[in-house]
Image (cartoon, rainbow, N blue to C red):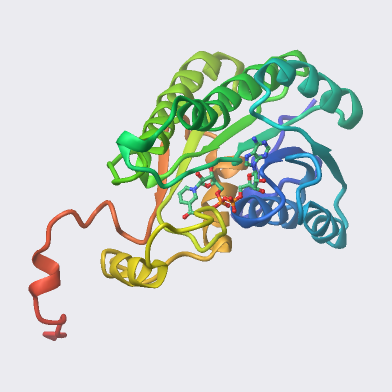
Length: 279
Ligand SMILES: NC(=O)c1ccc[n+]([C@@H]2O[C@H](COP(=O)([O-])OP(=O)(O)OC[C@H]3O[C@@H](n4cnc5c(N)ncnc54)[C@H](O)[C@@H]3O)[C@@H](O)[C@H]2O)c1
């Protein structure tokens, strides 16, 4: 038997023959991730809330690329149901190679207004579901002999505080450390676990704004070195790196895709005159 030839060039990103699970696939980043994985050759399992608007559109976009899709309505906050849910998915779709823990939820609430219900809902979706889905899918990956990929979508808020989001910030920081721990525990099985931390992306996640959204967004843009929010598709390249053979040696890493926000913590740049070419 000849040894497999490692892929070269852009073939390193080829996902043909692999099946990816994307949570929160009905809209926003989840839809872009599902379609991006399909463009790279993967079949895609789409998970969102039962009856979520938009999931059929994501499925149609995946299938238009000639890839298979399966759609599941599952409330990820129902932690006790997740092991059985994963078993059903595995039985119906075959081996699972990639898990994208993308579904997430946020609420803009001052720390003193956060109720136990709001705190625990955000923790269940952003932390508990990430853990228990990853746990069961990793069990299937090892049973199937799959050197799988787990990618958890965190946020720049896993790394810096943002007012009005105490529960969300804490949940994303927890998701970071739980993913790093998975990286260590799953390494002997060839499974990698990494996080992708977006900055500000144009999606519906923030829902209702309790203040002037336009003023907020324009103030925020001033804090982004690239000067604009990301489009969801602009996070897909980073995801494909973590999902494919190109990222085989990346584990326990965090890939920040934030237009430079975290790099720019000091105000000097805002006072400096524009850059002039000196050559
Ligand atoms: N948009 C941003 O600026 C931004 C920035 C940093 C991180 N993120 C993270 O990226 C991920 C995707 O964000 P988005 O902006 O695309 O959000 P979004 O609100 O547009 O989409 C999230 C999807 O997850 C689904 N979902 C929510 N709760 C669920 C549950 N209990 N069970 C099943 N599905 C559920 C929603 O129905 C929705 O389709 C989230 O984890 C979010 O925290 C987003």
